[in-house]
Image (tube, helix red, strand yellow):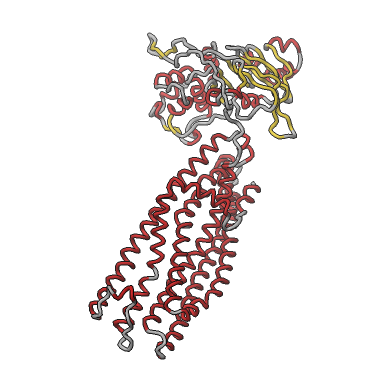
Amino acid sequence: MAESFHEEEVLGKAYDSRLMRRLLTYLRPYQRIVVLALIAIFFYGLLQAVPPYLMKVEVDRYLDPTHHAQLPKFLAGFLSPNPVVGILQIAFALFLPSVVLTFLLEFGQDFAMQFVGQKVMYDLRNQIFAHLQRLELGFYDRNPVGRMVTRVTTDVDVMNDLFASGVVAIFGDIFTLLSILAVMLKVNWELALLTFSVLPAIAVVTMWFRKAVRESYRRIRVAIARINAYLQEHLSGMAVLQLFNREDRSYREFESINRVHMEAYKDSILAYGLFFPTVEFLGVMAVAIILYYGGLRSLHGTVTVGTAIAFIQYSQRFFRPIQDLSDKYNILQAAMASAERIFKLLDAPVTITDSERPLALPQPEAPALAAVASHDGHVQGNGDRAAGARLEFRNVGFAYDATHRVVEDVNFTIEPGETVAVVGHTGAGKTTLTSLLLRYYEVQEGEILLDGIDIRQLRLADLRRNFGLVPQDSFLFSGTIASNIRLGTGPGMEPIGDVEVREAARQVNALGFIENLPAVFNEPVKERGVTLSVGQKQLLCFARALAHQPRILILDEATSSVDPQTEYLIREALRRMLENRTALVIAHRLSTIQNASKIVVMHKGRVREIGTHQELLDRRGLYFKLYQLQYKDQEIRTRE
């Protein structure tokens, strides 16, 4: 968790050319829109210098009786010498750029870049989610889920701010500053230099502002990370929290974390509250200087009244982009930090991929799970079963880290249609075998063969569509009962129809409780199936595993959360379903182990014994000791 907070603390540089070049590649599909937005913002910046200049022309030519200055050459052909007509023409020209064109250009560039920002955000989120689905499970062992959610949501939102109101808006402010600067120097360079005399003070204030906001922004990000982590942990464990009467203490802890966030935001508000009025104050100082110096020069006839009035307006327009640029600096810095984190995630290597020349796995013809109505009205299977497959673990070795090998030199074979149970103490490597078989993790030593083909030579989709998995911890997705059972439908597979869904539920004895639900198979399933009991969720996982007729079933302590009566019903259903189907069972229930074709006994990552239940008991070895410790009481209870 500390590593996660540290990652949020690092802000990096305000501008990183390497990151920016990579970010700009996301604009390529929309480069025409971006170019149009840049053209609009360019002309918008130029137009900001027009109204004060037209005001200068009107005052000097038509309103100041002492000067009646000559019109500029480029306007002489357009403006009438008649004061009434000329003023009307200038008023119309002033209205056109300051209202109509400015509105159209600002709306056009803002709408275009907001559109592009949303498109980029959409593309980025799709890319990140697609990449997350391809990463091995070991990546999620090392990285908290909350961090990944932050990357897809908060950090991508910052990218939207960058493209929608950052990059192009910065160009707009720069164009505005340059156009005003050029006109001011052209009209009167002395007054222009006087206006710029407050820039050093603005530079100092801006540097302080950036430093203060940078620090407060860093603290805000860390506080948000702590709030998210605390909420995720305590909301997930709410039942335990309430059981141990931890509500008051948890509230105080959360209040402390939340206060840190509030104080950081207050500092940010203070920085903004001081910066913008200070820049306004310095802008007013510039106006005061112009009024004093311009007024004196006007009395002596060296500066026209129109020029002084124009410079007052220019000074007001000149300092507004400076304020905006300082604010855009924070957007740019946040974007660089978010981009660093996003690209770090996207650059995480995908270690489990299809081979360059994947081999085809022959698929036996197996009808989908069909059903017919019997004379008593119940739905029964038609007797067709998916053909089994041959599995072989050959000198398999694996370690999650370099210091501890979880599986070492594992050798055993599962013949087609055979049910093999794997037993052993916790940490013996049983579940790791199933993870290697499904290529959640890659085999580091040896090989696993499916029908004589190394599983690494198969396409992942082809490999995994042969398996049906029932894990110990039932996981249901938001949706309906039917959509969760149909979850096994994958690319290149026949869709699972309503008849098959119903038949799968019947064969695992889940039909009874489903038909008692108000909406039956369309009953909504909320997050993680919170409205269902543990046993009901387990039954749905069984139905999900069987619905798409897998050739191989993996049961990872799948009946550990089911009551004995439900387990008996499932065992009867599995006895039918396992015909002509290979099964790998990791179980703590003696009933499941006794029915296995053979038992593989693991200890400290190695296979110690292989044989049937009775054969292993007769050897009086490791399995016999395990039986005495773990299974004998189950056998006594069963007999009773």
